Length: 229
Ligand code: 0O2
Image 1 (tube, rainbow, N blue to C red):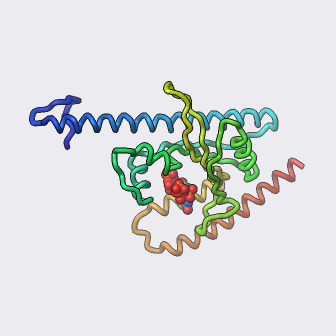
Image 2 (tube, rainbow, N blue to C red):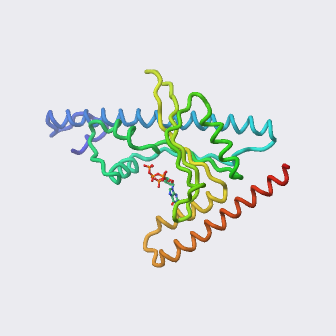
């Protein structure tokens, strides 16, 4: 059904069931926006926690444990695509529950650190906070993906206080070093490029780069340990 123009509910030619359906769609859209707002608030909460840790660290040790934080809210189209890819049927009824129970990365933060040890120090400090629940860890640093991808992924649940009360919201935090982030962004760009003819060669060369980056991270960490010894 085509929504009526100019924000009008009633339009010439619309019958009662069209109007009813239109109102239903508005309601679904409103609920969806409210759900997205919860995720947006959860991102703000986790980002603030990380910024507080950064400020405390820099006072105590005169260095920042992370270089940057990127945040992103998954777009409605990506949410529906991922649910479909996972084999779920999409219906308006129960959509919010389906998303909350099955998609863990609607709210995402990416924390980029200079050194590998800072990733684990920061993650421990974050998940050690008593209002945070750790739901799942995927450690692609200790166990890299076959293509060479490395990052620490953690799914957290954080309380968000809204006017109707407290609700726990899932957030995915990805921790990486600057070098891992460089590799992942190049890999991501190449993976989404269409019509790549020599894909296998590119995959193999990226794998080699991932190994070099692993060595580089280890060497940088060891240099810092020497300086700080
Ligand atoms: P976007 O836009 O980057 O967020 P799950 O979420 O557990 O049900 P999934 O998607 O396998 O299933 O989770 P996983 O393995 O924790 O990884 C998901 C995210 O990690 C991806 O998000 C990427 O951000 C990143 N990632 C994982 N593998 C690779 C990789 O080989 N290369 C790069 N560059 N990034 C990777 P999305 O969903 O792709 O989207």
